[in-house]
Length: 530
Image 1 (cartoon, rainbow, N blue to C red):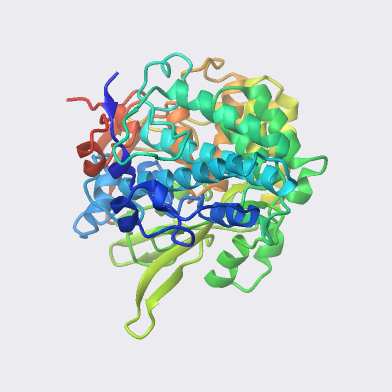
Image 2 (cartoon, rainbow, N blue to C red):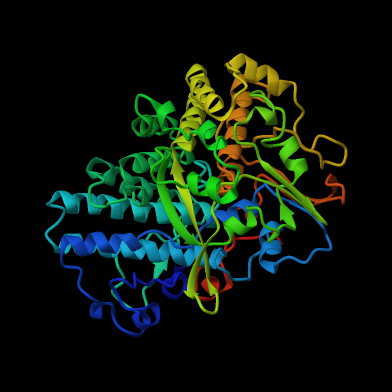
């Protein structure tokens, strides 16, 4: 297998709080860096073991959560490239290049923490045991984001040959290392190894605000999502059980309470990321345009979640759980000259000033990387795959009760009857109209269309789509289930005009292409159809 050099590609650098700057780091041998020789230094180092650039923007704009509006409106070339599933050449804080580099920077920091722990004699104290668990989870999470963004989704039939990403298991000791990209299956095996080693020694006493670090509930939520993607349904259920405990309803986001607050974007969005809320299991910060793109701003709205999408596919569509008006927290609708978008008030728009006088700086976000609500739906999906339909319906009813004031109760038969009464999206002659369900084409086996299993999967995927907007997790569901989606230009009145592209179930563009700089450094690019 071809060897590659990813040092410059991933811009591997360590936290400025402990080490030299990125440029200085590339000028000297690693041995010249500061020593991490105490427990407290290891713990401090791990604050930099989380990505500082988010995957959410690329994932959300790659998904079916956006259509093209106002064909004459000039938007950033970056968003056009992402929306059209092109190989992205533009760079900003949410670009594939930054996602790649930020993840590998976090992984590198985690590896240095693990090395420092060994140099201190191993995880012989409670602080060091918990630090080791956090470092292993940070390393696993960084690779989890990379493999799901830049590779085809895990599939037991093909992942043994599908291109993976380099799994960094040790700090750099030379300035010119070589690595093999490996396979998706190999990456998943190593992620599982790190998770399984970390879970028994996980704790939350090392930090004053554990919600900004991997803590036990966040660790189990990560494990549940990982095993769901890994097609190990029984393990997903087991991990979700440990995360949610005996009273999952008490861990869910209190939408009725939020709805009673003053109707204000800043108030709603800041409450959404409140570290005191039990639903928020792990919060992350990032340099990102996510809040501007999916907030009450005109920024980046050529490609948007418009009224047609909302009314036919997501939260404003009549579904088995009720209608739009039944939600405690309804989507906010905006319209203007050549613009139309429907959004949730979820991610706050923050700004970090580097020069207060000049008014310059960076846009930042805080977002929930893991929530109890998502974990609940992960468990429901896994139980559907195990054909534990009543158990799945129980979790789905918890979600409905928490989200809605309709008072409806679901059961497998009601769900089956409803979805069998609905056409699949794109069933019209021109293939541009949509409904609340789409054909599922996963690599794993599911029962035939119209079966209870398939209908319940349609339902839980619809719930997840609403729950996780705009964090980007819908993109991973599209990949996992081989969901075909279409790019549509909308008319001035906001209905589909024409289809401009189709992402088929096996389209290689489902693996986001590496940036030109990464490829130029020697990394094998993802294949593309000619």
